[in-house]
Amino acid sequence: MIMKMKHGAGLAANQVGRTIRMIIVRDTVMVNPEICKSFFKEDSVEGCLSFPGKQVTKKRSKKVVAKWLDLEGNKQKKTLYLNDAFVIQHEMEHIDGVTFLD
Image 1 (cartoon, rainbow, N blue to C red):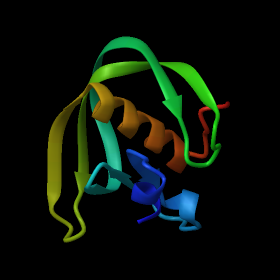
Image 2 (image 1 turned 180 degrees about the vertical axis):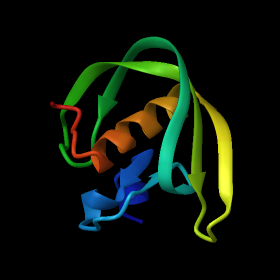
Image 3 (image 1 turned 45 degrees about the horizontal axis):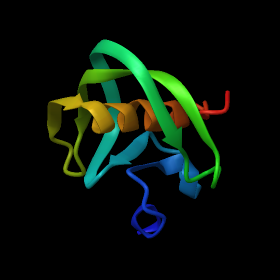
Image 4 (image 1 turned 60 degrees about the horizontal axis):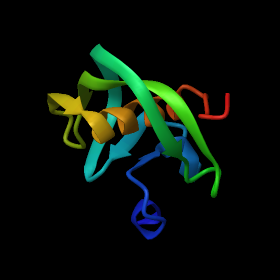
């Protein structure tokens, strides 16, 4: 709800006070997400719901292979491209305690 109200593409649990390894990328909830492979770095201009109005340019992989558990505990694996690849990298940094300003 917060993510959609603010027109965000992703959200990490710790951004809303939860200390679990869970993120949302678009409409996909990912528990214990991992990036298995990454390819083709390029500049990504990003904003962040935690820092309204700020934008930075980061080098991000524009293709990643990720795995995670869904809310039922089922293993998932998917190749993400461009914006979704950028979002998962950004949100995983959040759950690792890193912000895009670091």
